[in-house]
Length: 87
Image 1 (tube, rainbow, N blue to C red):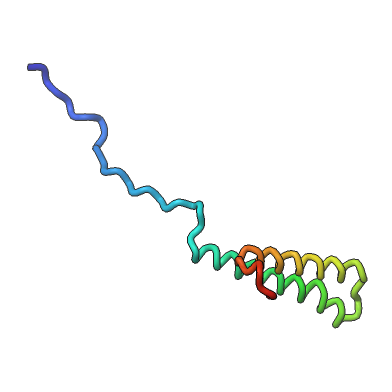
Image 2: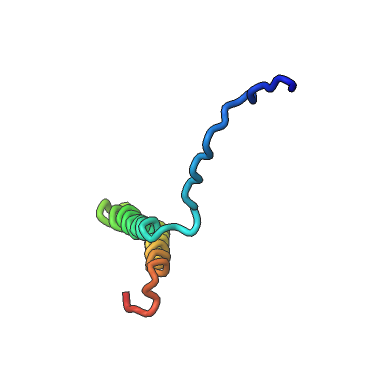
């Protein structure tokens, strides 16, 4: 009978697989929607109201702030799933 050698490595049990990244869980979806709403509020505050209050607002900056804020708001509203409601 030939001598047997132990394997050069130890057998370890398999690690559990990490959770799937897609599709997101409902908690992750709600968190993302809240983040988009917060971005909408922040862009609107800093892009529109701050220039108006400090009296150095240029029209194109205000238009861009309104457009970006509304864009993030509509994106969050669409992802939230209330398409048929009146906001």
